[in-house]
Length: 120
Image 1 (cartoon, one colour):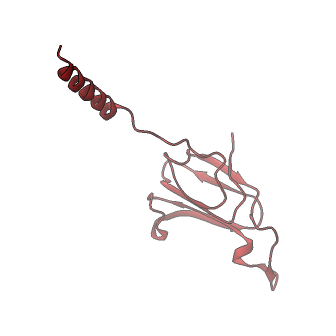
Image 2: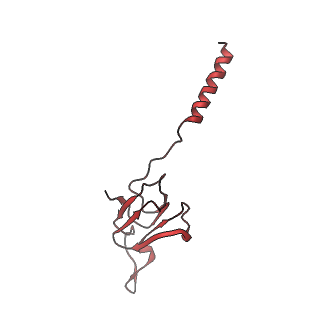
Image 3: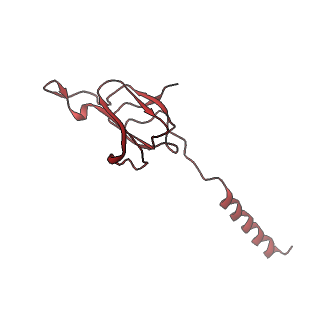
């Protein structure tokens, strides 16, 4: 086989291998960080998760009510874009909480929480 033809065949074989290779996939995060929006599947696995509560170093209370910045909040969404019109479940607390990320959930949002660990 002539050298020019061998080089062309090598380029075609390399490009074919790249085109047919499985797409790169990032590892799912575990534990889930306390702040952010995470898509179920690529970012996190479905399951029951637990947090110790607020990620704030201290709480601010006004009239015996903790301020929003003192609390942990989470949301589950029926769409991966975390649109507030598509909230399935939500909760806010300063203390420990659970979040059930089931098959209907497409995205999970956590605000000001300690990391979320999967419950075995």
